[in-house]
Image (cartoon, rainbow, N blue to C red; front, side, top):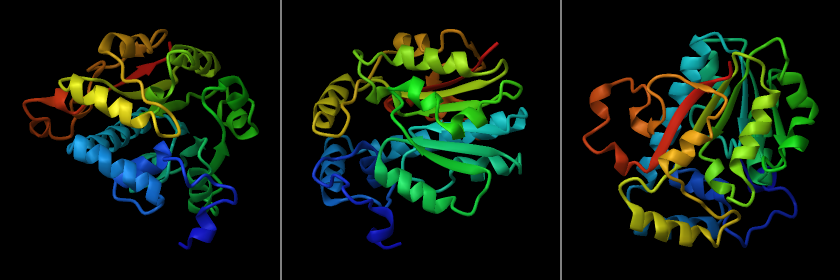
Length: 268
């Protein structure tokens, strides 16, 4: 795909963008030199970062598969980023062939590439919106249509709330979304945490101060608190590899070194 198709006019190519840096970690090609520079610096500092990002994507796939198996056919992927191997609609449709997905992101490159990916798919749409302005996001026609009060929906906030500062109040973001979700709906959430690498986490956050959104890693207690109003399903909030692994032996002896926590909750 030529850059002319996936780089909208006016795109900022001078500031590292968190969605495009994430694409770098996963080995993608939809990024710019400034994004690759930050990704390389972050990996030099923390060599396990690509492994952590792959663990996050693997959690996303497992959570979507689990919820599709429970009968959910509607997915709202907020902060969806640049599509990579196994996007949500493909994963969900392995179990629910009629699954519908609305992808939401603020980055114009992520939005443009997502639109090209689903251009011929009538059950997928892409919205450019800022999750921090949650009320406006929820007024988008595509989102209004997806959030049918008669149907449960899975809202995915995967590796995005750590880009919402304390002042921007991530708990409020979740709270507003919860009120728009029908009973039986699910919240899928993963979030960066210092885990077993607090000094590395501090340096990593300092590095991301240069990017399009600063990073705020949070403690387990603060991440669990984001699930207020939801019933956590087993195994609760755990490190990324520990959430319903397909092969338990793959978790390894130190899951805390994969510095991300994850969980799925159901709105009663």
